[in-house]
Each structure stands twice: as C-alpha cells, then as structure tokens.
Length: 137
Image (tube, rainbow, N blue to C red; front, side, top):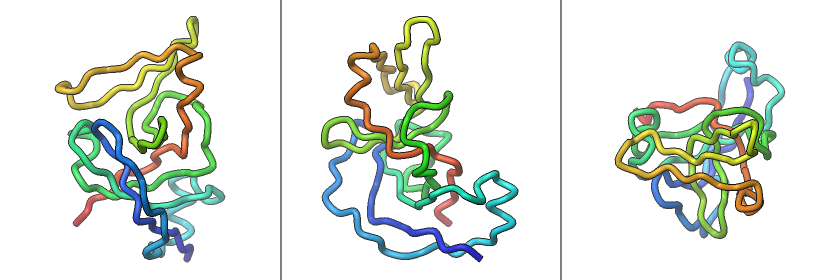
C-alpha cells in the first residue's frame, strides 16, 4: 500500500481561487499495483479538490483530483493545476508547436478560452498534471 497526502486545497475550475491554507488533512491509501497500472508507481502524488463548474463534464464540481506534482512544466496537452498570480486553477492546457502559444481552455463551453503568448505564459506556474478525476462519492 501507498499513502497519498490529501491537502486542504481547492483548484478552481472557474476564474481561479486564492489559496490561504495548504495543510495536509488526510491520506488516501492505495494499492501499489493500482498506481503501477495507471503508470504512476514512482510519481509524486497529492489529492486536492476541485471547485467551480468550468471543467464540466470532465471534472464534476467538488471532485477530488489525483495530481502528479512531479510534472511542473507543460509536457503535453492535458489537465493541469497551475497558479497565475495568487489564484490556483485547473484547466486544459495545450500548446501550438509553431507559435509556442499556450491555450488555457475550459471544457464547459460557457467559459472563454484564453490564449497566452510564450511571454504571457511565463507567469503560469504549473503545480502538477491531473492524472485522475475521482468521484466524490
């Protein structure tokens, strides 16, 4: 078994959320083989919560997120937890290979997509890549 720390942090799937407390609140105990099957046996993992509805239907409001903290820069298109300024968010990131622009997208079509030039993306502090969206039930 492996213990994964759970933190009192919520990444906003909306406009971003200011984090005032990053303390560990619990651990999630999982089977090592389950992590191996996910390709995460040696990953630095944490569980945080989501808040907001901009990533619906992919991320339900309040769903726990299994985040790989070892991924702290853009690697490939996917879901990332990141800070811009004081706000923590979870969004879908992708990069244009020609221009280097980063697209910050919500899965909920009611929210706008933001395109960042490489210079604008310098203040995008990637915390980790979302590896699993878990049911909150």
